[in-house]
Image 1 (cartoon, rainbow, N blue to C red):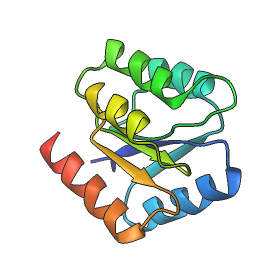
Image 2 (cartoon, one colour):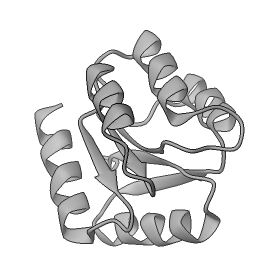
Image 3 (tube, helix red, strand yellow):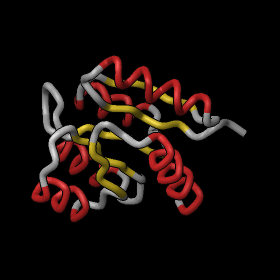
Image 4 (cartoon, rainbow, N blue to C red):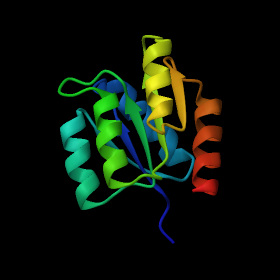
Length: 122
């Protein structure tokens, strides 16, 4: 059985690499994307089991990516990430079906727990 595939969508390539390494060590497949459009194209080709999605992307917002994901797969677990805390954005993400909204810097233990729980209940 293949390990779950997680898309890491963040324009910070260093953070994406750190997250992918963390996910690989936890037994997951991880695929990084630096913008929303490339993640959405890949989503059409091979949907992930979970997505880690930054709010601020260079081409379209993470909220818009989440909105488009929801039209394709209503139940895909999505964890939103942001370096700038905004209750309004967090509320919008949750209303669109985001599983969680995490502030950067991310807590590795909380992230692993959130992902494990999401995949077990998916």
